Image (cartoon, rainbow, N blue to C red; front, side):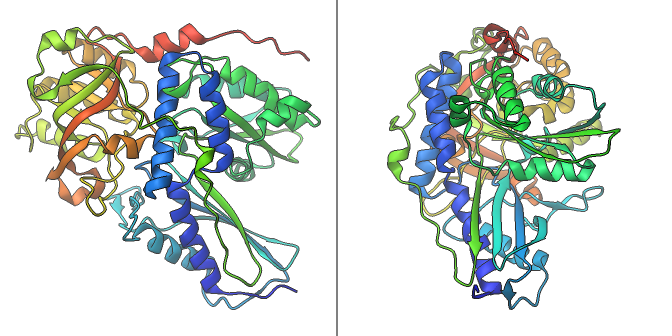
Length: 500
């Protein structure tokens, strides 16, 4: 019989796990990404994967977040029906205490991203609670816990459909992934829940993302079940889409495809699809009467790729002129130096409201650059914490009005832009650049100073003025409206023959 699983064991374990996964990728993810990097032939995708790997190693050494989006807290708890506990509080209360403790840890503060009142004020709870919990009573006398941190960019790309029983799940998945764009920050993992009910399918898709990556072993031995056959087919077909790392075009879009299934109604075929990004973060532990012990991965697991030094044309943000902007080419690497501003959804919404009221903006954006980022708090001598890009398509609806009214010339984020934004970029002679999603700690090393200058009540969504030196970016949309997210995947797309 196992010992008593105490509240302290559970709360301490989850809090420590959340800190652990903030700066350590799972070992199997590093192994899979390193193999993909070695085999990648697309130079742009290879450059992006190199930055992700370098960032991951830096985060492990420095014990700082892999990504500035330190995620919503997702905890899966299986309680053995014979487990002995001393719990007097609900699981929600205990997990929330763990989240508060982990996200406010002084040596490695994590960004609070959860907002209350989602249909109203959307006020940041400031401690990243409440957590999202799935619980189950199971046989046994232990408590099994899986902790994950889910970034918003990949979570926002979740899709669900109820197919006809005769429909092809593989065809639906491939068509769906082809339309996701790069906002989920590939290369990553696709989780599928097939069958059950609407809620069951979604729960399975989220949970299966935490299973070990074993695609190389599966490809070597071959499929033994219908689920494994589907995984193999989807791995080949999704990678054949040519989306590649960060959507730049390449051979690897997914490192693995995970599938869970459950019996379902004869008239239904529910399918849930949830992607995990290049900042895949999760950890499993079992409580049987003692506190869990987490062993960091050995640094020899990471390839030694230096500090990710990037070549490229240097651009001075303080002396931008139209000739410089017009000379940018899609896919070109730039090193940015000078002053720029940060701003995300909430800041954009406020600025557009001010424009509509005929008010002056709180910062002068004429001829300047804006970076779509919500940074993590700095620690010690740091200027700023991990500061990677957020998904730019969320700013598309604000872009035409902001470019027209402010004279803004450069926007920096991640993933593709939609037709509305691209047309505004072309019309106003602006350009859109991307920083690598999943390389937030690496990007922060290019920042020399940072200070909030507007909308400080928005917390991490406030506008900051930052000074950068040799910040690596890639030209995604030039002043003519040409997009690398269209030309890159088109170049690397290939046909795959699937045998019955």
